[in-house]
Length: 447
Image (cartoon, rainbow, N blue to C red; front, top):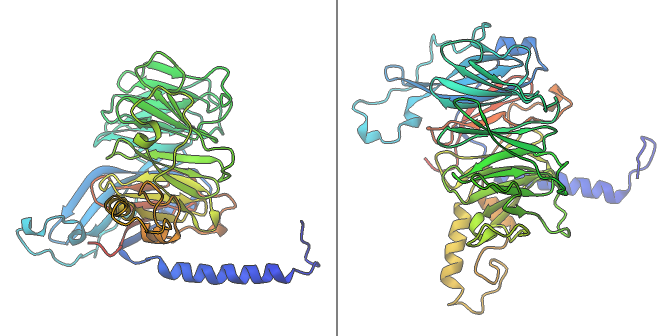
């Protein structure tokens, strides 16, 4: 039904909107929004090109200053084809893990005279390209992916790529992605129309393997993102399924497929992410805001051979407020229970799985001893129900909403604009569409 300015709005619609507004106010009050640290920086060069494509990535460069009581971290900040080094200063005391090892008192942070504003001069350039993703290999090198599907290797010893892989099968606009293996020996990237996977040797750039299913129902479905699964498998997220291939198998068909039953209408898959700390744990997100937590052991049992395997129940299910699409997922690199999701508006949801693990433990301990217990909290096998509003409220640790101004752009937030720092727990960098960089550490009641 289409409404015009002259049409009378039904009273039921007005009441529904009022209820939704009041629910939102109550919901916002229950979500923590305090920060242990937060700082903002909008480089001058970002203001000059407000609509450029940007992405960020932390690098392993930490500079403590005990006399000032600060710690300086470094990020790579891209704008179109240019890459800048950007620094952010944080209170040193908030990031010392063991105070007993500190030989002298930590003073209050003194930021006087410290200027972290980056220069207009870029540090690296990928000429003529729009960089959409960065992955650091070590303290001296990183890999960049462009909107045209090209890969470029950079080091601290030069401003231009030391090696470039130009993929002639790629065309701009297919939203390419790539992932690096844990041992930093292989790269897998999406290719073609976004429906092909290619694996390269990270040192030589040699093409090692290629996957494309012929005659598959999803052969023309674009891959949204790709992830290494431990050391032996690779997973790819399509609109309607997640597929897993064995890296050492000669068979190019997927070993397993996670596909939702047709009677479950929760939108199309938009992202998935593997835990870097638990090989079997992964999460999926949809364009209707549904997040599901999965365990490969419950999906695939003891074998990886059943190609027609469909989905089992996920461990848990969460939902973005107002159903905003999931456009990015990140597991914490320092805490096996934490992950974040990014909504299309740019809001960053911080989640913890500790509540789920405790419910599993309580279910396993109590299901046999309490036969009369109502199954409102647990299913018949003692596991928590898939979606539970109380569980969602317990697992949602924090909501970051600052910095994303919808008036700056008519488009939604892009992926690869929110990142974890690899060694400092819960330190996040978020980039908005106008170029504002926010570095923050949420306060979740745990220090």
